[in-house]
Length: 156
Image (tube, rainbow, N blue to C red):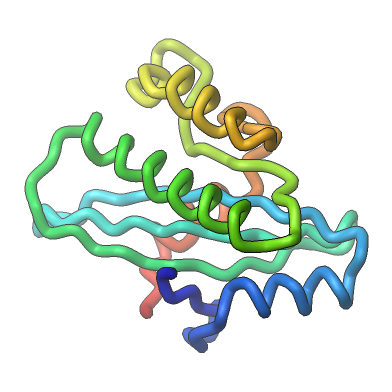
């Protein structure tokens, strides 16, 4: 599986790390989401995020960064987000005894946004795992963390 990192850049084993979090905080809710950004040089940076929500005590997250250096359409870039999120969520669901709380997509339900074109596809795919699916304007915990990373430019 892909390398996930803590916000300090330290690489972790995502399954054992998540298990430790759940053992430490039994009421923990786990969200998977992502975001991408087109850089000025034409590369696209993708972040896939696992967010751990501690009730009303905050959120902690880990991430995987992927850089693609090929020209792509907006559809291709957004579909790349959906594919990365779902590839990870499927792998996690098949390889972990821990159940995801929700999958978050940085897609908008409002038809005036281009990303709306992928909402039905993404939510149907996400729902096929038997997990809650969120899109904007709903609360998208993991995708907000990924958005922060795409704008901050995390390393790793």
